[in-house]
Length: 104
Image 1 (tube, rainbow, N blue to C red):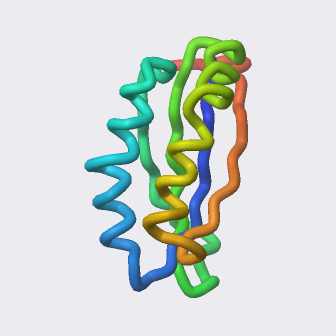
Image 2: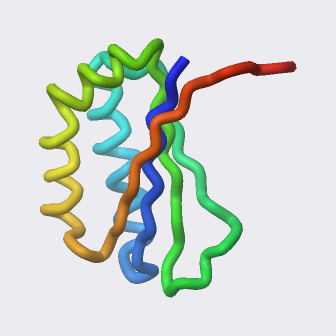
């Protein structure tokens, strides 16, 4: 299993708007690519002292090949949508995670 993690710092003034957009538009669009099995969003509850709040969106896929297909075929357009809507009021970075072990 591979997790595509996108951490985003959001200005306080647009937090509600951004979160609604994520829930109603962006996460469904990510799942509509058929590259991800699940999409989850987490609020980061530590280290948020920079004038905003941070969130981590995690998208689960089967393997690195599937993630690469998403990155090649869909990522640029979906990133552009976020930039067009929110501009420099958000700042995101991406991390690719591979599950090594999971215990109950």
